[in-house]
Length: 250
Ligand code: HEC
Image (cartoon, rainbow, N blue to C red; front, side, top):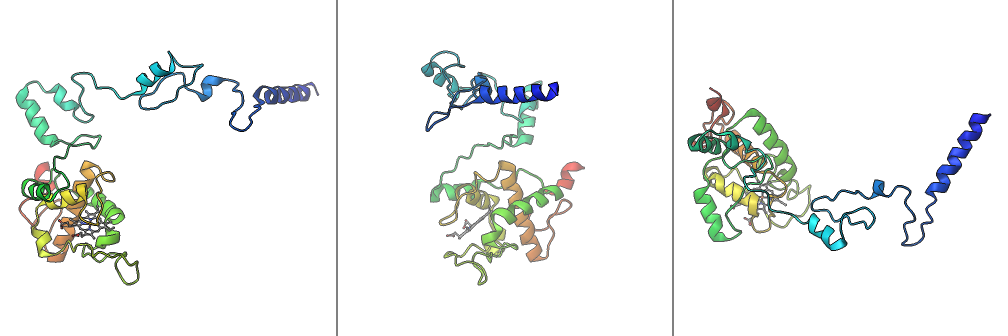
């Protein structure tokens, strides 16, 4: 019986201490303020609360602004460079990374202009990733999500959105299996993903650096299927640019 009494007392106490008194825009009183309002400041998040933060509001605002990384900071995924014993080893690691960082942010120096599109097509030749079974599987998954709806599962330009049973999309998506696209440089594909093309939007914010290149590998594998040639981890008889992963693993 006593236990039950205590229990009721405890519940009553709980309700009274949390009684909010919230009304309209007034959120009520907080029982333990720092549980709702972090007492730490966080980068890029403005969460000022007068009771629990250091300094005044203006000072707090200064804390939340992005800052320049300290000198010598390396992008995530490039830590190997730091460990290199000399310039030659650093250059060798940099070549292997091909600008790739785990954060997926790799600079792209081609604007959305016809001139830069041409330049991208002429200058971007190699796919920095070898052809691998895992990469092709990843590429297929992403292609089916982001490209297949328009360009079709087979990349023949006949996606659901333009087929009779689908929607009424006004523009014909490019047939990526045509001779023109089999011969096109990797840069033509990469630039389309980065900048879009006419009515097609860009996918640079949807796909990371590596993902873009795996999608391109997958498109190449569809081209190979169309041509009756081979494009996989073991062998590539579609072109003499893209490198089968097995060669790297030897
Ligand atoms: C909403 C529909 C749509 C989606 C989704 C889409 N595309 Fe396109 N794409 C188009 C259309 C339409 C064109 C033709 C644009 C033109 O030539 O005017 C095109 C053109 C292209 C071209 C040819 C560009 C050139 O140089 O002529 C490539 C390559 C391409 N798309 C790749 C992709 C890839 C890779 C994806 C997925 C990441 C994708 N597209 C997603 C509609 C789409």
